[in-house]
Length: 226
Image 1 (cartoon, rainbow, N blue to C red):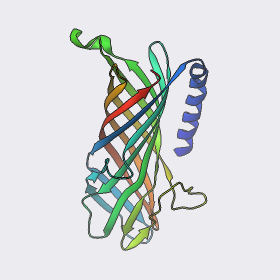
Image 2 (image 1 turned 180 degrees about the horizontal axis):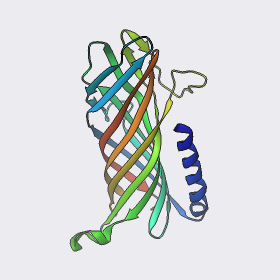
Image 3 (image 1 turned 30 degrees about the vertical axis):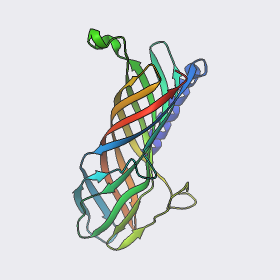
Image 4 (image 1 turned 90 degrees about the horizontal axis):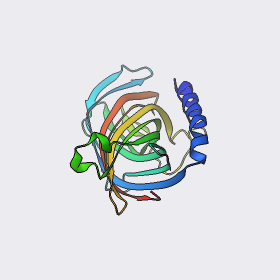
């Protein structure tokens, strides 16, 4: 499944490249916070029974390392193209007895290819003079987990590490999708709210944990080059 997803993203990149090379570029930088919905988590370990539990997640977006979004976009007459990285964190708040710790605190880093279109014509007349845009994106994520399950710890390392060289690093998981609405003010300040959902598949000692992540994101940032 992951190989098929990588192939699809590569094909999408090839399709977008000719249009992007001929377009004006912009950069968006944002900070924010998330509201995460509860998730049903399944933990599978060799020689043990599976653990299924429901937990809520907090993100602590204003605590270091902070939540952020970075986008580079290519301006087109109707709909823009973008690549976006979102750095989020997940701290589980409700855990069963066999799970002592469960978090992705060194980063659940979503990577999206986005399409961004003006939606002013769909708004009431009083708002049509303002710049509102609809953002839709597909992608995956790089997750760096820290867990203690049945008193067995799965690494707690930050920084840029590569699973091929060091299994405590970031692990690719997919698919992820997003949809959101943003307003860009005349002073280039942008306000955005969006819905992000994706499948998280992370390693734990002698196994893996899988769940569907769903969250609302609230961002405030600056757009450069629009």
